[in-house]
Image 1 (tube, helix red, strand yellow):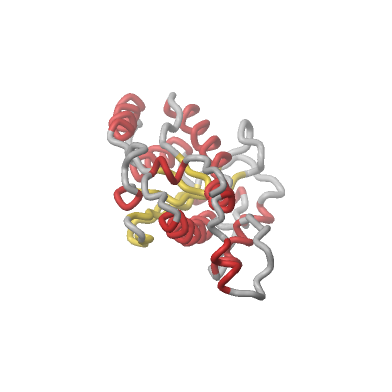
Image 2 (spheres, one colour):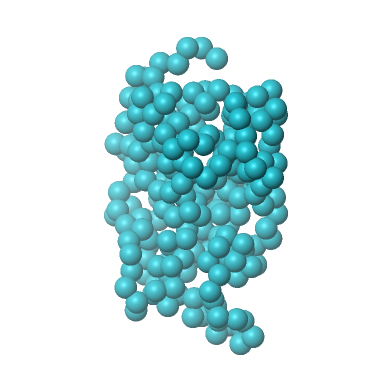
Length: 229
C-alpha cells in the first residue's frame, strides 16, 4: 500500500461528517452500518483489534453487497482467541496493518451511523486505533442496540410480542443471544466479527420496526431516551 496521507484521510472524514444525517433525518434515509470488532482483550486502552466485520443497513434492508471485513496484524493475543478463534500467527501472516485497515474502514463508513450491541467498546477501540495511526479519532455517530432495546421496553413496545404468544416468558434477556431468540434470528457464525455484525443488522431491523409502530421515525427519535408510554 502507498504511503498514507493522514491529512487527506482526515479531510475526507470531516467532509463525510459534515454531510452526515441529522436528528431530523427520516430513518429510511439514514445509512446505518452494523459493525462488530473482535479484539485481543476487553481493555480498550491497551488491547488491539483483530478483526472487523460490518454490513450496511438502509431503507429497511440489509445490503449484503455492501459488506466490510478486515483482519489486522497483531503482535500478541490472549485468551480471547478462544472466543473469536483467530490466532496471533494467523493475524500476523494474513492481516493488514492497523493504519491500512483504518483507512479502508473510514472509506467504507463515510458518514454512516454505526450500530452494534454494546457498540461503545468497538467505537472506542476503533477511535483509539485511528488516533494512533492517523492522528484523529472516529467521529461517526453511533447507536447501541442494547440501549435501543431498553428504550423500546420502557415505551412498552415488547408488550405485543408477549401478547402474541401466551406461552412466551417475560422479556428479560437483552443480550445479543437473547434478542436472537426473541426475534427468531438463527445465531449463525456467532463470535466472529462478520457473523455478529450480520446478526446485529437483523435484530436492528426488528427494533426499527417496533420503533416505527411507536411513532419513532427519525434518527433523533430512535436515538433518544424515551419515557414509558
